[in-house]
Image 1 (cartoon, rainbow, N blue to C red):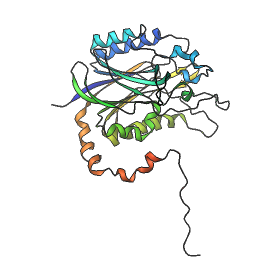
Image 2 (cartoon, rainbow, N blue to C red):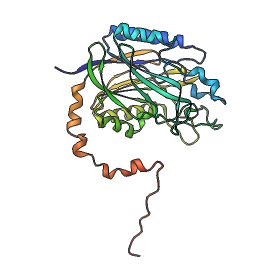
Image 3 (cartoon, rainbow, N blue to C red):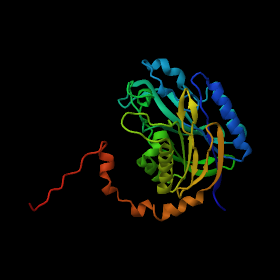
Image 4 (tube, helix red, strand yellow):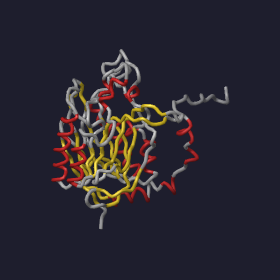
Length: 331
């Protein structure tokens, strides 16, 4: 008997700066109801699903931005989501901004902010938490940019690594190896490989990606922005023999366009479902987890074929360096 689960990517249209959590939560509840009606067991929402993508706005004092962050889950405003999860027997991925008081790397307790996602079980318990590692953008206002991307100001680098856990999914209770990424993480093959080394079967990730890379150092066309996103996800799934559910916020948010194209990808790197609107949209696919075995036991049999002794540069170096210059031995 195949190990098949039905997954849903719950794309959200734009959430405007003026709209409160009750607006976002109301729309998410409608998507959860539709997912239940279509037989989904897993529902994946985007990055920062409860608010607008606030890192596009500069704030001098971060304490003034606390209203964008979740202090606890569930809160009074998000409790309806947890009630729906229990009612429908769903497992969901939720991306949100997290503010917490905990010790830093030096052991000093302080207020800390992270771009976070969690996987929530049908009983409302958090199965797994992940904090975004690969933060794009910049920390200070950049006058040359048409659109600010201040994730490095609003968030710290995630400190939980790339965890994977085996957990029962949905009403069926089928045990699945699940892991998470957030947005820019999808472009970094190291992140996928750490998940793959833990035999991940289903990677859930949400994103809020601008339709244009607006900088003065070059031009990346809209269609290539989408292609590069999909390429990264397809490669990650293929090279680590797993399914991926990558879910967008889409449409014109506060005057800035986010591209959608939420996708579900199988372990052979094929897109098996894709959103086609710039609005709230649910796409559903059946995922036979037995498909993970082919890659994991042949081309990407890590135990047989990986050569970590040759990869030292990956963990010992951050920036790229120029190679040595070849010089001929003969004049």
